[in-house]
Amino acid sequence: MKGPHNIWRLIRTGATFQRTGAMGVVLDALDAPATLRIAARVIGFPFAFLGKKGDTSLPPVTRAITALGPAYIKFGQILSTRPDVVGPELADQLQYLQDKLPPFQTKIARRMIEAELGIRIDEVFSEFSEPVAAASIAQVHRARLASDGREVAVKVLRPKIERAFRTDLDAFHFSAQVIEWLLPSTRRLRPQDVVNHFEGVVMGELDLRLESASASEFAENTQGDEGFIVPAVNWGLSGKTVMTLGWGEGIPANKLDDIRASGLDMDRLGERVLQLFLSHALRDGLFHGDMHQGNLKFAHNGDIIALDFGIMGRIDEYTRRVYAEILYGFIMRDYTRVAEVHFEAGYVPAGQDVEEFARALRAVGEPIFGMDATQISMGRLLNYLFEVTEKFGMETRTELIHLQRTMVVVEGVARSLNPHINIWQVAHPVVESYISNSIGPKALMADLAKTAKILARFGPRLPALAEAALIRQSTPLPEPDRARPLRAMGYVILGSGLTLVAIWVSTLL
Image (cartoon, rainbow, N blue to C red; front, side, top):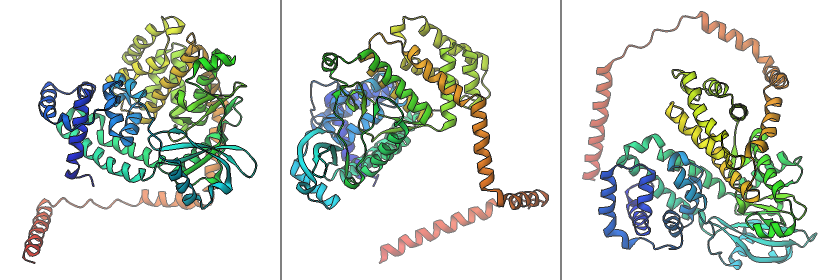
């Protein structure tokens, strides 16, 4: 329940944030008024001893969140993709939030796998390792199939993790309500909607069948991408709490010295990571939503191996076309067209001035294009773009925010491999190719073909639908029922009276 019994959890959370010094950082990110800052300090200080100490080597916010446990860590990771909510500075801190927790015992993992899949570990696997990675929701074991000797990665959820997450989710919902009540200015950020979004993401990650489905779909979409590998799902050894994938042998993307020593072309790897991400987002509308260095490996032949498909981003075809036109407009420095695209898509209210909006966009783009190629950041441009669109009344679009944040992460991976990469030069052919295939005459013919298929499917019903529409148009509409406020008031009074009677009777009984 999302009720007052969560007050203790809220106090413990607040005390931890106060003790670790994270309270001030969060209040700054939420642009809290001075009175609330003072109140938070005065009220929070006496309770600070109730908070958890955390790892003193971490920054305040990551220290507090890590100390509070798995649900808070995952919530922090989700918030790192929402700079529109927590601000770019705090989002950057959360981006580096550690997701490394102590593993649980292998014997417990073995029991869980056997119970979920109805197998005997020693009969199915000739080898089964200790945990090789442990995160907030699950841990991974390296194993070898007894049937054919192939190596696999076996991911198993933490025991009782779903119950723990549901308990903390109740506290998150209650906290969001309290924040909206104490800070009315935060309502534009919709804290309760943010928690609902988090709940949807986490509940999906707590069912590994859904992650298996995402991995399978991602693999199908990218099977033609040379040098990009998504490990295959072993459906026979996967279930709600267990997922088995092919083992991806390679050098983790965060071990730059090892990559350099291997002789791989790091400049080319950086370009490929960026181009593949853009291709997946624009071409397929399905992209890896958590494509940081910990979820990428590089095989010894240069192949890029993707891991962990719990967070995936989706963009519908229309939004992809809009996003591509915006990017291409900036690449070509055609700010008038970029402004027109925003208005055509309905992102900016029609009452705003197109030319004024175009001037604001020019003020965003020109300084960046005046920089050296190594300083040009697509992530920075998108951050500026969202600031401008917010001033012109553009509503927050979660899918674009997620794409923008992932773009920043991918750009960081690319720059770690190739510090001199020219982001725009690398992105240009991908965006241009998508636009030529999706907005020109070829795309128009494809759209007409899709429309014809839909009409053909409903062909037998079209005459009846047309006749019904004509009948409705020719039939006069019934007069609307007159408002009767006295009758409505009477119903309210009657309902209230019955409720009071029911309460009185229950006290007598």
